[in-house]
Length: 620
Image 1 (cartoon, rainbow, N blue to C red):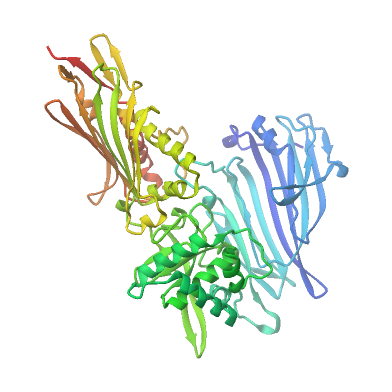
Image 2: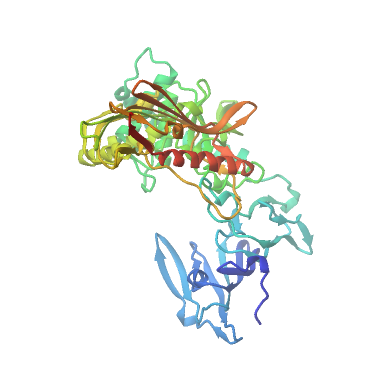
């Protein structure tokens, strides 16, 4: 029997009728196994829905067994096509293994239904998503069942409802539910994954023998992680001592300078490969081979910092692009990315990222929270205490995409000569510098010409110059400067006795934002920044600009008289010289949904300037 569909979801290509997920922990002898059962019913409404659900993938975990696989397609006329078990295949894609089967007869108006159970070894932490970016669901449910002596902590996120723990007979039961869950589509300037409805769960108590001590806490994690990353053998210490002689820190170097030198030396002289698998991750081996995986390079940093007398803290950082580390529910699987924090200057480094240098992190780790491991002594034993704190972004004015351009006509008045200087500071420079460090010279040249072309829409470029290209130039925020002279005819049109000058194209192609559906997610930028552009236009003798007022655009948003975002362009004229000044500001990383309309106007204001065409006409 086919199901009714909520009219609110009629426009969807596929509609989830039911999504059930059940985790049951069971004793089998002295061992505990997990039976993870999944049941889903989906109505197909359009071609995209057919594409999404004509095949079903079931993940194959290590030492897991997939059982009770059932699937069927219910056609619009009520006929049922059951899955032939012989059609279930095993495949490997991108290093992961799956069981896969095709759903027969999938068409518009049909419903597919499938269910399966995965028997897995006991696992401490788990997470289940209950919202999709493409499919709404009418009914969703979750259940976690465990023996009475094994107690789990469960938390629903983004509005997914979860019950309290209930003891029924010899089993503990926690349930969750939600109804009529809309899809959460990707939107520009947002990261949707962390806003999806989900359930996280973790093992917290073993109540055998009356014990009520919470297990696998962040306190426990801090102790274990600190031991892993600072567990050096005598041979390691000796090898690090020899390495310090090669690093050769100046005797008068302060702590910041030591950090800068150590970071650049280790990242420049060691091959850091996160996928590297080694039978021996001892530092003596890392130093000898000059190769390390993520754990190895972090241990090397801690040992060198310790030897250099640098006060540091290991930090497990959130990634803004994905799900955050939650302080309340201690899911250790969320703590993956390691930073170092230096309390005295209040700055960070990312030890496993070869492209960044002090004091800059990959931008996705900024404006977040992190778990800071603060070392402490218990008697003669050194360990760490974990506390949550903020990982702030660098000041917004430290990241800038500035431009200085001088625009002149040649004697024919059909060609422009543009002298341009792109001046990049902070993150805009950090994003580009790796090209000048790691790419071959011919690729660097090609890349530079493409950047300069963006100013004049021409590859007729001379006098190219690139300054401050080393990764360590970010330490004192030296600007990456890319300059060149451009000859272009694409920005000039002759219209009888008039000249049309596409002056707005000097700032390059700009983003435009149009969205028919109401905005769902907050705005999130990679980093806060400013853009200051100065354009000097030399009007040809005998001509005047008819419409200079078109250069004036102003869209701003203020919070307590402080501009948090805005685009303001204006001009002044002195004789035949017009000076255009453009100031674009994004002071914050986050903007709430309530400010989306203003943000959209600011973004589109830069696109509007990009379209400005000045009309030059002869003087009377």
